[in-house]
Length: 546
Ligand code: NAP
View 1 (spheres, rainbow, N blue to C red):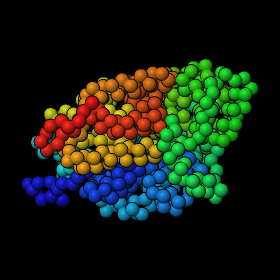
View 2: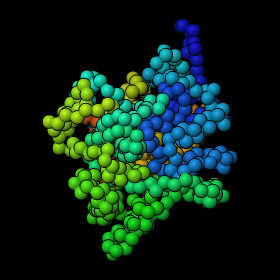
View 3: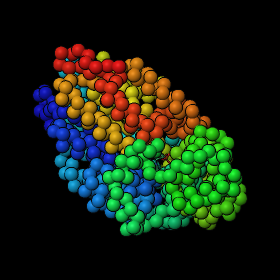
View 4: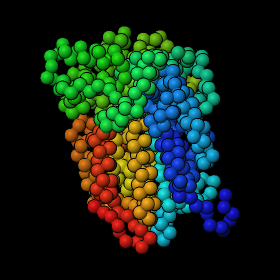
């Protein structure tokens, strides 16, 4: 740490976050010869898999695909024990990567970054941590994740509650024992839907408070077989290449025909087949499920019928069956026995769609005039997604422009990777990129490669700063919106739209044009001399633009 009044230490690149983005960034930048410092709020690596350690936490993308591809040795030597891995194994994998590539020595744990200010006179970022540590860097890369700021809704009376409280996105590291306890779960998104079946196995009683029912598909998870693992590993390099140009960054079959072009019987067969395979591939049954309301309704009704056939109490089944938004327009959930859990004697569902939770009390909560008592409340209430974590850092660009202010009416980026007036500030999987609509590992690797290649380009060309032109940014924002509005996505009050946070602008934040199409756009931008970016060299002239 720098002594008082001495100039802060300096590195080429500061990285904020040691999740899968930060780890790969560090590895790549180090190999390219850049000095790098990583700041991480947690006590260890893993990002989202470090924080989200609630019972039942599991990836909803198959692990053979949700893993790094940058090292052939790594992908050959690591073995997954299940098709869809559970959180502890993914966290172990992150730790393995950190050890294998000796990454920990450049990471400062338990160190939250408070601010990052751009000094235009020096063309450097001054980054300050919660420990009052300062460091300057030519580049600052926000590898802070898209869903990393847990959202605990402002429930009246929460401070009065005498029982235990938990948030799925910030779960304790030690085991929580719910044996013999009565618990409430508030929230039925991916986290709640994964946690509820596991909690119900252990607790005395679970009451689920549901504001909006969610469509959920079975994972049909199973132990990894040598045969399945080999089918990937024997041809990994080629399969990964293919994966990078798919719409979602996942190799799975999209049936390229419209749903209503086939008979109802054929559709039922297709849906049944995909349901039996498990996972999100169900949404690829037809090519217009996310584009056409009638096509969507056929898939949605199939899922509702499944729920009615699984859940024995017809009233409960009806409450669990989503009806007021198209399937897939809120993040589809992938579960292990979620709907079956409502057949248990120790699980109750309370519909709070019409009467919200009035208040939390000393012993429980009140809704619709009825009082409930619990030993513990689990908040599965989601995240301030995509922008929340960036806003927690006081980021100031040129002329003191604050990121929070600039994005007051919604995030504005070029390619989801940079924003005008913030030179040399990069975001990994930022708003305006496929990010949360894709296999995050594929999108992370693509952004890390693109960003580090750009930094190498600047070193080679002796360029000092890089930032998008306003025009390129405006055009990109318009394009992102235009593509989103061609789909059914804006019809749902989802966190993609910022709808889960009171007062947050309703803008569809990720880019839905597809992982492959987006990658080609990024490649073209480079091929055309970094079209839409402006650079400055030592002599401060603009070297390239538009
Ligand atoms: P979420 O999808 O935003 O769900 C939050 C839930 O809490 C919703 O049911 C929401 O109801 C409810 N809620 C929020 N505020 C409430 C309030 N004041 N009163 C009552 N209910 C309230 O959050 P999440 O489940 O944590 O998932 C977030 C994202 O993380 C997922 O979409 C996914 O991308 C990712 N994730 C992935 C995995 C995986 O890979 N398997 C697992 C977990 C999470 P409304 O719908 O009515 O707002």
